[in-house]
Image (tube, rainbow, N blue to C red; front, side, top):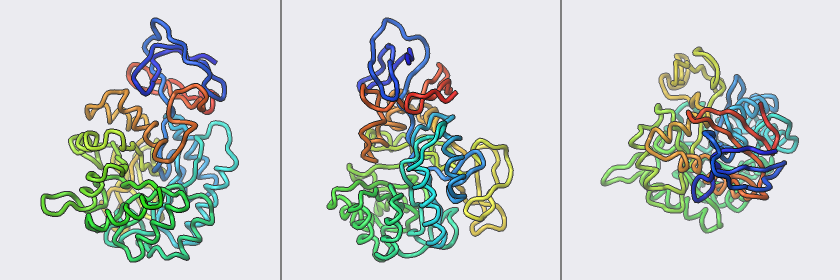
Length: 372
């Protein structure tokens, strides 16, 4: 197949024809590619649901959210769990693994799971159900046995957190700090444990559900910003993060910031009341908040964001489209250690997003196959 436009490359835009099958074959420079942009497919490392589907629904839910987000340019993703008793979490992870091993047309590639919970601080759960627990070696072993976990959110101040981080990192799992009341020292200790294993560390939805930065107490936010090796997720729906706060992260971590959605099942659906982890969520416009009858009414409960909207949000914060596209593709690919996607280079997977001049999705290619 051939796609013509402004092609994203690591060094900038190139007017070109992109020739591809399942993999990219050639980038052929031309004088003018027209008004459309050709980007690497988006990689979302934190997404609970969308289009009425949720990771905790099992295999059908995972496939449904993968189909929904593919239509918005996400070609690879990590379905994300929510805090529940360990048997239910393990069941969800097994469903993710089943989809990962049995990919189907029109679904974004499922690369494994983001385990968000149950190893969270009970005082900083946000919209997570009140079922947090400590990261014991036995519990970590059970979760790793599913072979589904690619990223884990961990509160660094919990008893056993550093040992659990070592255990996860040794298995190749990325350790992301979040839902924490910890100090900067707690965060640095856990990140150091990860780095000593040769692993990658980051922060789950930076600024949200973690201790903030001040002059005398850097908190987990400060520790993540100060550590050059750490990655940071940002939810750019302008409900979770102010544009200036986002701009500060872009400047501090231009090559280590990940755009994520943290989307719940209501993404793509009308306003109304929906479920997240057994708790009611009221969705009004761009806001999703725990409703009356939940454990923490009024708390932001994920988002209704999609990755194409997150990309437009990054541009609205002052990034160039080229920079924003890298934070949605190349950076998450590097974070996950993916060498076959995230860039437009001959030999890599033909996971592509085609945007028009208004940055709206015109076409998506999943391994060279057109979605629309």
